Length: 409
Image (cartoon, rainbow, N blue to C red; front, side, top):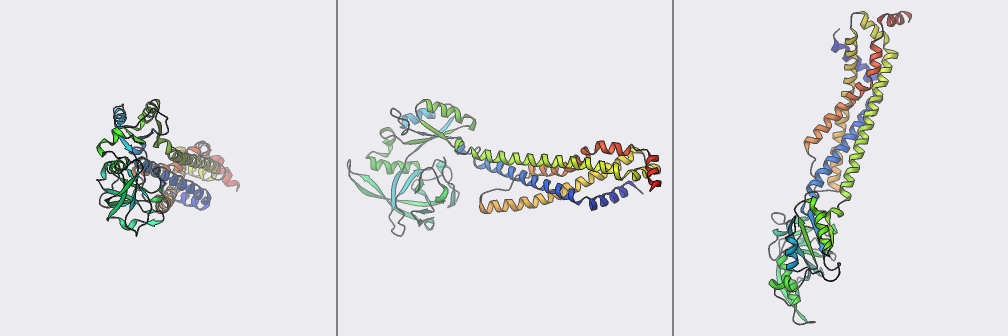
């Protein structure tokens, strides 16, 4: 009888009598793999949509809330742009307008420059998605899909006439008219910081509308009229706090997207912690199972060990057979758990993408492959390490002692 046949026979017997340890260990591996998949997916999502994005490298400065003596005009913005680590400065302002078409009584919409700071993603668009601030051309607009309970999604691709205010005196004005081409729509339920009814246009378009109400030429706007806010884009995420500190010392009220998204990394860390807890629990359980298996060998398989030694098997060979049996049992458990975990991960990913994150991308394959390999090997290694002492005791039994037990029965 060769070693493979012995291992296979004993492994089949072990699987029949040890189903509970196999099931519970496989479930632990499966849930650990689900947590690993969730962690990798969330980290990839955060890296793509939060960490490294321009919004996470942006600082909002507000002159209105910071007191007197701080003015956000073109000169001030130019000085801020010259600060170390500052990549760009984008002024922010708003001006109201109305849709002339009475079929869409959406109320006042607010022309807002596209800065990328805390602004909603485009859900429907023409051509390439106009996400970057400089992607919008003059008289192009991204509308909310709904405003004042009116569905505006049918306007995508249309050119709409809008009405705005042209000042004729300190307290008087007259309507002015222009046309916007609707190139995109965003989800009005996003809850953007720009307020309800925001309509995103180019900076030059907003300046023209505001200049008409302020009775100044558009090219003179930044010199004669200050901006209420501006968004400062920093070159690197690590420099955001330093830039915030400098701007605060200059008297500006400052805030950053990093503080607004601080809970996302916390959520990822929570999933990571749960993953490590599960992996530790599986490791301890498998090590305990290995110790229990070794003790079982000492108690119940003395005769088998004695017979093997009596027919010429060396202690090393007996030990190798028992360890191979144990490692095979652990490997089968790991494979079963990994297969179950992959199926559960697929279900969780599909549900999350359908119900929570439609833009969620599949997790990177390389870290998942490494995690799956490690989790498959974990039960085998833990079982082996947990049973070392007991196996050493079992294989050191003299053959005469085991055979005397055999004759006594």
